[in-house]
Each structure stands twice: as C-alpha cells, then as structure tokens.
Image (cartoon, rainbow, N blue to C red; front, side, top):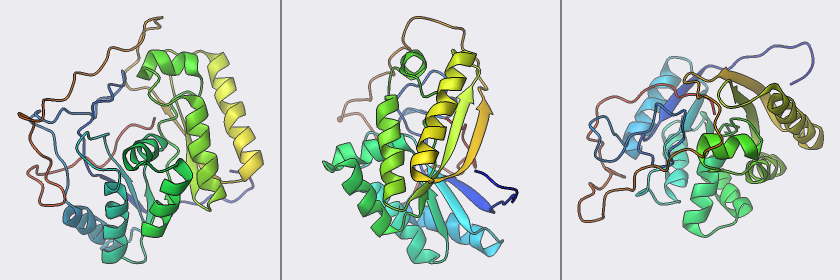
Length: 250
C-alpha cells in the first residue's frame, strides 16, 4: 500500500453460496433457502471453477459466500482444500472476517485456531471485506452490529500475525459521514503500521444508499424450521445453475 509500483492479479470470484440470514441493509446478494434464486455450490463445482480460471490465466480465486445456517464451520476448510487439490498452484484468497467469525463460532475454535486450520487447508490470504465503515455507530444502523469493529480488527490482525495477508476495504455513502471515513482510514493506517499485512485498499460507494436513521436495520426473517427447510447440496451437487461472479465490497 505504498511505493511507486503498481501491481495487479488475474483472479476469479467464486461465491459458493448466496444463502444468508444476516440481514444487512445494503445487501442485494442474499437469498433465503427457499428463494428461487438460492444456490449452494458443491465442492466439485467450486474446484471446477478454479480449474477453469487457471486454464485461462488466473492465478488467484477470491471466494466468499453468504452465512448459510446449514453449512458447518469446517466447510470453509473443505472449500480451500478442494481448490488446492484440483489446482495446487492457485492462490486462495478467501473468507471475510464475518465468515471467519462464523466458522470459529460453529467449530468452537478461537479465531487464531480457526485461521491456523484454514491456512493448513490451503488458505493463502483473506479479503478485508465486511468492513463497511469501521465505526460501531454506523455498523449498528447498517448491519445490526453483525460484526463489531473490534472483532473485525482482531480477525485481520490475527491473520496478519499468522502470515495471512489481507486486502482492506471501505464501503461508503450510506448512513456514514466524513468523520466516519476519517476514523475508518485512521484505523486501517494503524493496523498497517503495526502489521504491514494489507496488500491493497479498495473503496466502494454504496450501490443502495440508505437514508440516515437512528434505528437499527430490521432483523432478517428467521430460517425455515428444520422440518420444512431444504438441506443445502453440500458436499454433493448443486441444484442451482449459475452463480454470480462478484458481490459488493463490504
């Protein structure tokens, strides 16, 4: 994030599921399990996409997904491992801090233990998404406080300490103000000064501006009951045809 050299990477986005019940206000990606457009890719489908990308010159896959209530916390390890087994040379850039916390919570591991296991499974770096604006005043309104600022920082700094570098992001233009941008940038600069682990800084204007409000975002609808919910096609075949190739930076 400094110096005169400009670099780029040829990458492919693989969103392995769009099922999510987090309920972020700005999100146009999430689907409920019973929605017509909901999908979950199988491990073979994830690996196939990685192989296709490698064959046309990609050297990295960026993999993120919704917080699917039925996927175990170890599913992320399986995803990284599936890509590395199919394409050993592929750089696996995957799993936002929100996904890291979800995986750690579901497995009962600490954040450090979970990231260590993910690295052993093939994870090379993580996206610094789920940042939005690193100010809990904004985060509560925008995302119901889904991932407190302190937890995001813990995930990122722990990853850096383990040798997993990350990107850094800022999504602005929703319920934020310039003072929040300044605080966000100072937070990122402080982390970079401490760890040197950020590879880039990605800004993204909100695609769905939300008027300022003092009320928290509405809760996401509860998942269907276990007796009526469809089980996700994991690790078998997906019943959904095509996945999108990108998702908003957050």
